[in-house]
Length: 113
Image (cartoon, rainbow, N blue to C red; front, side, top):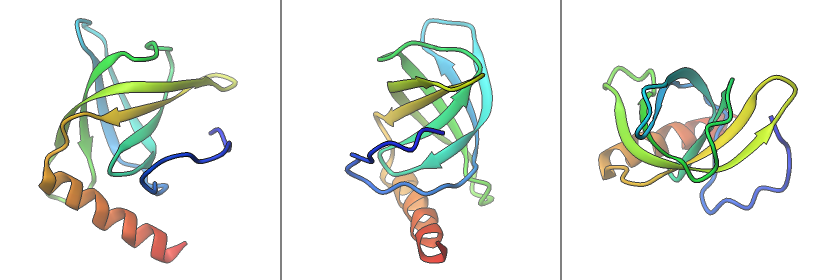
């Protein structure tokens, strides 16, 4: 994953959640895991460049036994690595209770690092 300057407004934690990502107006669905997660968005590695500023639907399993988080999102950056595309996705309509679940995980991860 890219190790450039972190200009994010919200901290992120390295936490491998399961994710299904669907590009709007496309039949393609990508199943992968997160590289990192924050209350503002996620980073995932994809086998395909889905395009910057693409609208997507995110189904995120935090593996906390509390069900999926579903949110619309938008791809805000894409960086090609050797064989994958590291893709940053900003959440667009994350519910408050889902934001709180993510925040608990981030705080736990940041305390242990």
